[in-house]
Image (cartoon, rainbow, N blue to C red; front, side):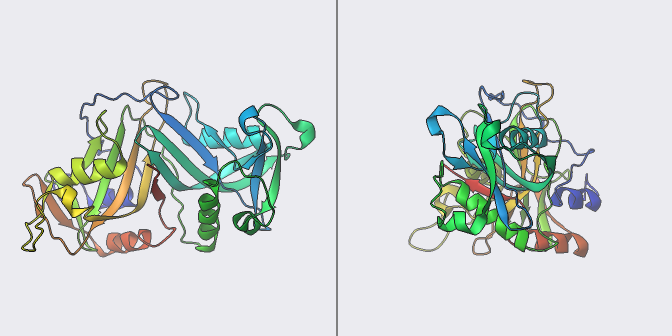
Length: 327
């Protein structure tokens, strides 16, 4: 491999930062600023030993009395973990230790929700006597009953139900379930790093040994567009089909990749306004029905058996961070 040792590739696919392989310095016309040009939501799915999930009752006038997961907007000069812990403490009265990120959701690359899980380490659960502008109270409620609506609980929005389900599945996935944590790495833009495999033992790199990388511009509208058109579309050439409707452009292939999930989320947010960006590393594989031709700037690099086994584990459900495109 030209620029990386295999250990560095292994670190990336395990959701770990590689110090000697910095992201691209590609210029961009979009500058993310928290609570101005970009919105980051943090959310917590927390369970106790009784398989109950922590819920809070809203105090805001627009949704007062409705129930929701502890969640809210990240503040300037705040990391993802700091934001999750602050929201849980403000809305439920409990202190929490985060142990994994469960899900990344995105709308048009300007709104992101980062959902994490962990366990309670202290504090006192908020009661109606403790009500304030953040919430009325918090309670541990049976997760399965919430999913089935047997409690007839007035939910603020049903978008939390898949997150609770994901949290349950994560708990059931055993000791090898996702343990990926957000990384405190500064980025000035919003960017996607791609770990793209063709077969279980080959990964796509530039000729100087870097993973494909793209910084968001104003014209980019989704993660799939960024990956499919701006990264893959400028690296891979797909053969023209002999069928009555030949494939001539990437958009006509309708996503020739299968996205397995997210391997890492890098954000630091300090100092504010300078490093409010985020870098998301996505694991994907080429669909075997369409075999592309590489541009001269990239190469398929064979990985060791240990790295291949790591990739295979990460492709299993609930072993890496789930990626959802909301719009």
